[in-house]
Structure formats: structure tokens, C-alpha cells
Length: 100
Image (tube, rainbow, N blue to C red; front, side, top):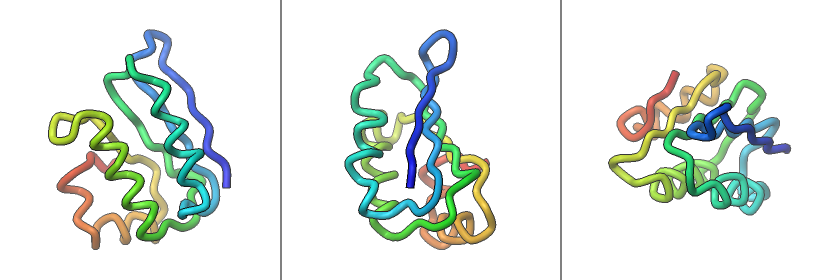
């Protein structure tokens, strides 16, 4: 499990890349990835290399959404494999996030 971040050239977009399993063991690392970036206007969660996520990962995504502004948050989830996308769809996350 690895989480890496990068910012756009103007600093307004934070990309968070999640590799491997996204579960409770990555809670602190995921939280640290966005909490120190208050000037960000858009968050992009890149799940290209995410192999698994559980209910605690869904909760962490909701915490990020709250941190980013709740209903006014600009958070996108991209590059999900079919299993991850199925979990997000079953959980109705397409109503809370832009899923690409």
C-alpha cells in the first residue's frame, strides 16, 4: 500500500495516487496526504493501481469530501478497475463524487 501526491503547476489541484489495497491500514497516510494542502481547490483520487478497497476506505473518501467542502467539494475519482468501480457504484458514491 502506497499513497503518493502531486500538485498541479498552479497548486490548485491535488492528485492522490493509491497503490495496492486501500483499507484501514492506510488511514493516517491518506489523511496526511490532503490535510497539509489547504490551498487546493480540486482533489483527484487516482485509483489506477488500487487493487482493493473496503468500507473504511469509503469512510476515508467521505472524510476527504467533508474536508474539501462537503456538498461544495470538488473531488473526482478516476481510473478505477471494474471491482473498485462496482464497490463505488453499489455504495452510491457517484452521487457524491465525480467518478471518471
